[in-house]
Length: 270
Picture 1 (tube, rainbow, N blue to C red):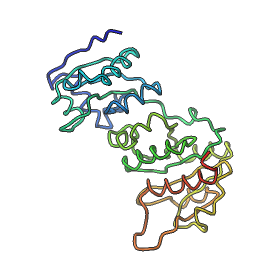
Picture 2: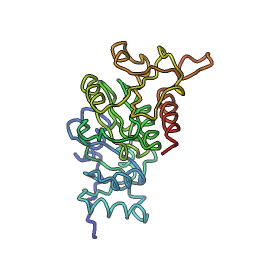
Picture 3: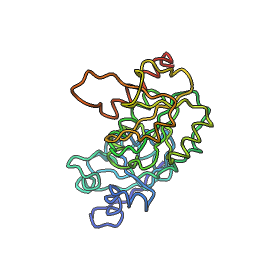
Picture 4: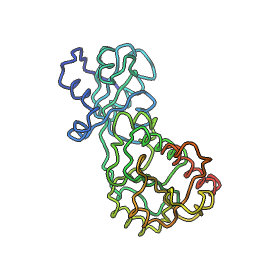
């Protein structure tokens, strides 16, 4: 199809100002949009039927075949296409060397109703995770291990932040994701018959001794504080990841990967 892009050359253009402001949580909340950079991420979003509101194409990439292919796909799905000088693309991405294409994508409603609680795979629960880099990395790991879904519990960071989207490397568009307060989440997982396993300093068995073959959800806590007592009280199993000493903890994304891959190993990586 023929694409009729808009050419914008001024950094003071209202659309450019709005796109630049999407690094702010308030603007993301007000507009319902978020940014994704790079052809591979945007192609993944298109493949998973995320709705692209605006596609920004930098001047230096206009002759690239793969950029033109993505532009045509986005336009066919109703996206507005704009061409900008490289300096404006850089100001939107806040990088000196921005990606060839940047998309403003419509957020999805992250409710538990969107998840299939009967799914036989492993699940991940994240309690008050605050670091967007950790969140994005966990989504990437969850995608690799084909988890049933990820539930963000209580006050987690925004999965649509620029940092989280970048760290997910496109997995945000693949992983089934939801938000809930703890009580709602716990009622949901109990009704679904999910055995809740938490990594905790109060654990009484190693993570390799947990039976992950049964329907299970792995609950991981806040980077600094871990899980509070009242949350641990609702868990079916508390376990430890062995450490030799020295460092007092693992990075949250690393710990989640260790737990998840042990669970997946027990299921013969099915």
